Length: 80
Image 1: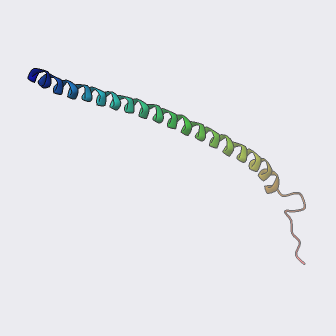
Image 2: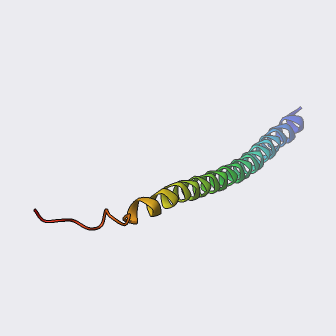
Image 3: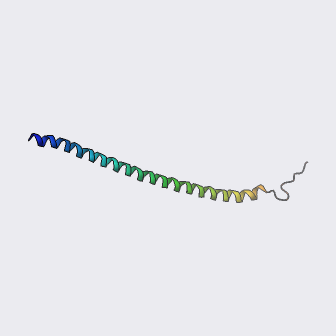
């Protein structure tokens, strides 16, 4: 009976360590998946931001060119 206890305790400890190692590996894998998802989300946000900035520049640039060019009579003033 003494041998069974002396073999059982290290066996239980070894199984516990393997379980913890498996949990650690699962945690690392989950962290990698989350990091990849975060990177993909960041890229999507960056692309959306770039597209929005481009659209805004197109709208403002198109209207801005029209409003910055003075008409024939607007640029001249007359002193009274």
